[in-house]
Amino acid sequence: MILYPSFPRGALQTVEGDTALFARWSRGDTGDGAFRRFKGDMDPPSLYADFVRNTLRGLSTLAPVTRALIDAERPEQVFMTAFEDGSIGILNYEEREARVQIPGRASMRLLPFQVTLLHNQ
Image 1: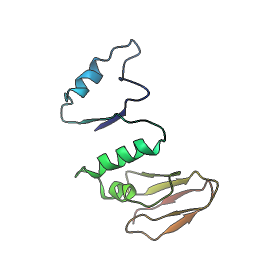
Image 2: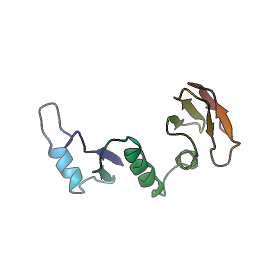
Image 3: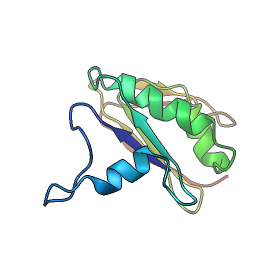
């Protein structure tokens, strides 16, 4: 699946300025994939983040760890990623402590600018 924020960038293009691929995707010509275009404003960035989160929630093919991260409660400046082995990386990119609650796990607090790795349960 391709999620693309059109504004303020406009159509995706090659370095030569060719937008044919973007036009095909926009028409639904994606083979076995899918193309979702975010047509909203990129400011504040949380608007695009909500679009991505809601689009991913609608997929039945997400790994359980990915779904848990999408549904996690966290401040806007806490970033999480799921690794192939099921472990989770978390970055608190705030100047204050942050509380994170990932479904199925204990609530945790992260110090300012802390990076942590949660191993697969």
